[in-house]
Each structure stands twice: as C-alpha cells, then as structure tokens.
Length: 420
Ligand code: ATP
Ligand code: MG
Image (cartoon, rainbow, N blue to C red; front, side, top):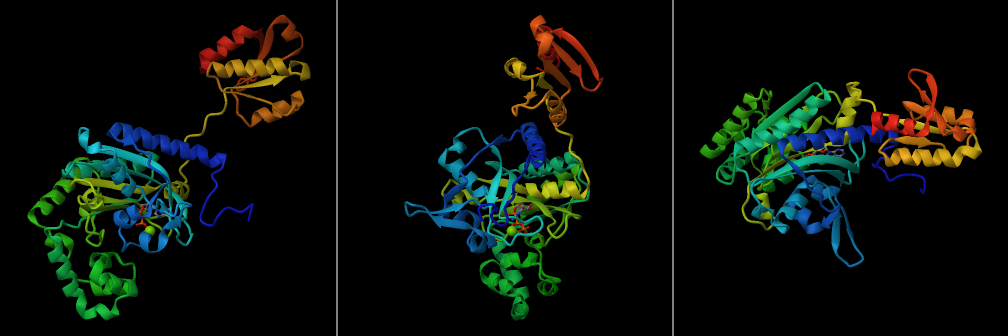
C-alpha cells in the first residue's frame, strides 16, 4: 500500500507536467484576453455548501462526495466542483460591491468518488469560469467563446457545441407539468433513477442515457416550446452572438440541468473521438444560485471543463504540444579540483536568469557529457585545468559542435546576452 497510489488518482511525472504547464499557461493567457481573473478557494469546504450548491438530487451529492468529519467534529467535503465555492467566496468577500460583472476563473483538483475508467478519475482537474452580475446573453456567449477558443488554439478537431435553454422560474413550472403529464402513462416503464427523478427532478429524465427511457421520450414537449417571452429572447440573442463570431452550434433540446437555480442557457462541448466520455465541457446560466447560497439575487453564468479529457483528446488526435525548452547551459568541471569553480559559475549564471545545469554526483568529465545530453543544453561550459589559471573557460556551442576558449567574464556576458 505504501507504494501504491489511491485508486482513481494519478501521478503526473515531469514528462506530463511540462504539457500541463503549457495548457495551463494557454488557459491563463485566454482568461487574460477575455478579462477573467483567477480565484483560488479551499480544497475543502463545509459539506452543507455542496449539499445546497450542487443540489441533493445530483449524482455528485448522492454518491460521489468525499465527506468526512474533521477532528473538531465538523462535516467537511473535498470539493467535487468549484462553482459553489466561487459563489460562497463572491458573497463572503462582498465582490458584488466591486464594479460588476465579477469575472473569475479557476484551475485545480476536484474530488469525486466514482468508478475509475478511461477519462474518469477520483481526483481530476477542472478549469472553469464564473461570471457574476451580468444577466445579458452577451455574458453567456462570451464564456462559450472562451471555451471554444481554447479548444481551437489547441488544434482539436471534431468538436460539437450543444446548446439549449431550460427557461426560468416563470416558465419552467408549466413545462415541468407538461413533461410529467407526457411521461406519466409510461412511468412504470422508465428506469429506476428516472422513476425517482419523476417528482423531484423530472427535467433530468430528458438526458437519461438509458435507451428504453429515450424511447418513451420520443415526441416529448421540449423546454424551448415552453419558454416565456424573456427566455425566448435571451436564447435567440445567445444564438445570434454565436452566429456573429462563427461558432457553430447544435440546438439539443435534451440537454438540461435539472435544478431550480439553473436558468436559461445550458451548453456542452462534445468531442467525438475520446471513447466513452465525450463531454469535455459543460456549463450554463444559474441566476438563482447566489441567492440559494445566501447572497442577494445575482445572475451568474459559467462552465467547467475537464483537464484530463483535454490531454486524452490531444493524444487521440496525435497533437504534439510545443516542446519544452531545454536548459541554456551545462556547466562541466574538468576534474574534482575545478568542481567548486564550476559550481560558482553555474550559480552566477542562474543569478543572471540563465538556466544552468550541473553535475552533483561527482561524475567524470566523460560521464558529465553523457549526463548533459538529458538537458538538451544549447551550450556547455568546461571549467578547469590551465584555462582556469588563465581566467578562461571552454565554451562549446552544442548545435554547431564548435568549441573555443574565452575569458570567463566574456563567457558570462555572452550567455547573458543570449538567454537572460
Ligand atoms: P459526466 O456526465 O461525464 O459524469 P458531469 O456532468 O459529472 O460529467 P461536470 O460536473 O459538468 O461533469 O464537470 C465538467 C467536466 O469535468 C466534464 O465535462 C468532464 O470533462 C470533467 N469531469 C467530470 N467528472 C470527471 C471525472 N470523474 N474525471 C475526469 N473528468 C471529469
Ligand atoms: Mg459525473
């Protein structure tokens, strides 16, 4: 057990973390371009926050939370998602008092007790954005544009944006009723979870993956048919904004978020070639969530995307991310007598912002050269021997295979001009 990580978790090794850093840097750059700023909330919160914020009829709350009692007897939960925490932080830190909207993003680990399988882990990572305080359809379109742009910049193909509207507290009750009336004659033929959802959360029946249930949904009324005037206008405007920036979308009337605080837009981005798990991004508007969690009524819209699924998709489509850069210089010591001077020189280079690798294993010069290959250094400095007494070093340009003797200070200045 000591040498085995928990089921459903990953170790990301240096060959992986370079890619993660690249993708994270891209996300941060995009957020900067779109005017979103980072928020970092605790990895655990009081359990109550997720019961209320995620909803007690969801899979997450019913089966997937890592909940435990801490030594003080409080029930706490490792965050299964970040929206509830972002809302809490928005209310607790009175962000509504700042110029609105508040546009936030997060990247970090989430925890769900699920059956591990391809693309599904118990500790996984999400990037997401939340925009509080803007009710306009432009805010919905803006976050969709951000998510879409991200996948485009990575060069992923085969993306499909699905979009729908689930209405609002004005128009949803009548729709709920109409859907229940439609399904009631076949209620006993629906799957167990759908029968359970029928009273509490009937909209969720629409996205049940069970083919039997889908059969009884044929011809069911859609949320779009039932939208009130405001919701219809909102949805049309979101579509218009997407048209204006040439983002293709499919209206999918089966795409829903079942809980009361979700309003208007629901969307998902699907990828067709990463196996069973095709949803790579999900989001929508939640105009009632801030209120549900104790804040003033505040519109909100956001999405979350799964980072591991991004890497799966990149691998499946054989997309290579730009290579990591190697170190700038490898500093080799000719012999033990030169080790201290090589060490001093490597440190001086680093103090000037030059990435300098060195041996710390007491290797022979030959072994140091072999070791240096691993760093893909552009230059090698060889310190020691007569050169040292002359105040010079050997500077080797690795690509050109050329080596020359130059004064130490000149070597440092030369490398600083190139790399610092
Ligand atoms: P699914 O239907 O696949 O369970 P979900 O509705 O639970 O997805 P969300 O809560 O909307 O997913 O999370 C947004 C994104 O986070 C998903 O689209 C997916 O990319 C990713 N994600 C969710 N759960 C996991 C997990 N256990 N492992 C890896 N990625 C996940
Ligand atoms: Mg899930």
